[in-house]
Image 1: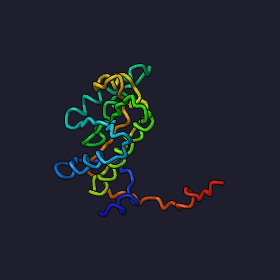
Image 2: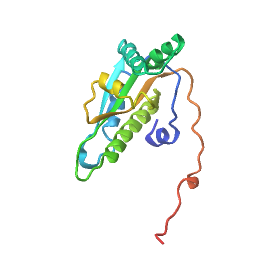
Image 3: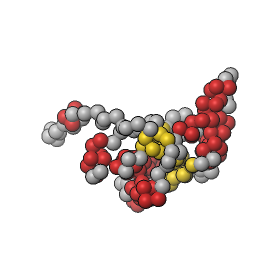
Image 4: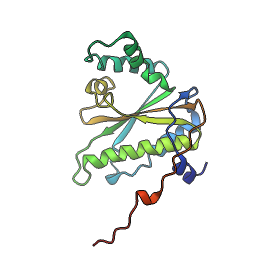
Length: 186
């Protein structure tokens, strides 16, 4: 698949199965992240690769972080534990916030987002399914601590990858004029 085809047609693929990307596929995905726009060349991103039985441990971390929710049923606990098992590979995207006179934290977060977008597009280009999840667990300090994040780091999301269980849905046909307008400066 060529680059424009991947950029124009990428969609999230939520039902994933084995195998996870390996070898050259995985290296292409990882290398794509390293080309994200990065003001100041801070490289404010890093990634944790979670697969195999480590996904079970991540599920236990999720459950421990959810312990403040009163009256969780066993079914709800099982659902939380199983969240990392939705795909054979989970990549935790982390932003390492660095004080810099010209690069605010917002730009560093956007750089990480660009790296994640590049990875999921590179995955799509190689017929690897991927989707990006954020939410309460990504913002949970207990999860961050359990994953070994430093005080200046934050989780930017969990990227799930694997083999699509079914063909991807077509990308929506959006009209560019609905989102782009000329501005004359007046």
